[in-house]
Every structure is written in C-alpha cells, then in structure tokens.
Length: 286
Ligand SMILES: [Mn+2]
Image (cartoon, rainbow, N blue to C red; front, side, top):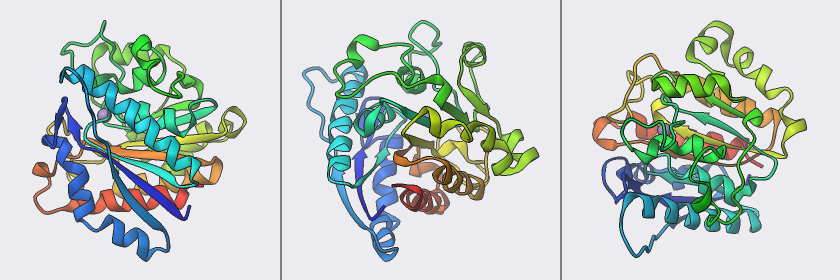
C-alpha cells in the first residue's frame, strides 16, 4: 500500500505515556516515518485523544477502541492503511472494527493468550482480554458502542507464539476454533510449513485480515519487549517472514503493534525491529 496512517494510542493500564504507553513515541523516534517514505510510501501520524467522564482503565480502554475504530475507518475510506501503534494490546478491537470486522480474519502474535474474560482472569488486568473481546467472549454490551464491532470468527483467527498462558486460557483456547501456531511449530516446519495449513483456506472465509503484533511474541534475547517477557519466542526474521507470507494468501487491510516498553530495550534493538514490522505490514498490505 502506498499510504499509511500511523494511529498512535499511547496507553497502558489506563494511563497515558506510561510503561508500554511510551512505545509508540520510541518507534517514531527510531525513524519510522522517514523509512516508510524512503520506501516510496507516504505516512502521517494521528494521535488518539480520549475524553472520558471517569478515568478508570475500563473507561479508557473502550473509549480508545471507539476512537481507534473511527480513525481506522477514516484511513480505509481514504485508501490508506491503518497501522495502530498502541501501548498495550487494547487497540486491536478498535483496529479491526474500523478496518471492517465483517469477514475479517485475525492473526494475533503474542507470548500471552490475551484470552481471559472477567470470569476467568486471576488479576482483573484488562489487557489480558483483548483476543477474548475480539472473538466476542466478553464485554459485548459495551463493545456494541465501538463503531463497526462484530465478533470475528474464531475459525478465521490464529494466535502465534503464545507460550505463557493461564490455565483457563489453555483450556478455553483448546476448546475454541482458534488456530494455535506455536514457536515449536515454526522451529519444526519453518514459517511456511507452520502457517500454510491455516492460511490456505482463509481467503474463502474472509475478505481481509488484520495482524496484531504484540512485540513480546519475539524472543526476549533478540527483542526485549516488556516486563511480561517470556523466553523461547519467535525470531524477528520469522515474524517478518510470516507477515509477508500472510500477505501472499489474503489481503492485509490493517494491523497494529503493542506492548513495547522502551525501558526494557536500552540499546534500541526492539525499536529497530518494530520499525521493520511496520514496514513489513505496509509491504504486505493492500
Ligand atoms: Mn498481548
């Protein structure tokens, strides 16, 4: 795609510019715009402003989804690719809703399941519910306030690189129709071998896909992302290869990055990889 809206939503735990909320600014500082433009595309940055009556994490999460949905829909209407630079993973519902949730597939890269619900969570941490929200397992009444939201089909959803799951997430993912692509699948069969069974039938089920990349899907030795780092993750080259491969099978309409806390990345390796992920999304997108 030739034009991109980088939609910045710098929240973590309901706080602006805190912890992973500082990730988007660090990715921009790494030269994301200049490098997109050097590759022949045009980019602009749109920062999400949230205005809520009561600043709880819950209020801010859903207001962010509403705002992101609006911005992503405006981007698609202008034939620009929406790429959300988020704080935590509570941006994907907005991104998918704005990109077009009907007949949308999702590939969710993450060390964690993000598949808790208010009934199964041990902590109440809303960031652990992003994929469960996206597939319609919880918060459905308030999610109806997000323009364009409908639950995405589990059969058109894959979670990639998850390796640090709560017991309920293990059980609920296994019982769901979501495809799990594990790090060991990629090690054993390569990116193409691990992804192709999911991708080969996908274009008959959906019109497009949205790719959500939690940076902690990567191995923390190569790309330290945040305080929830889990060992034995994906190589950056594998993530980039997967994004390109997905684009060969189905239209990539939008995507997002999240859960990158620059405090865990003193030498900027993850910032660099994040820019490469943005460029890969743009190259795969249409
Ligand atoms: Mn996540």
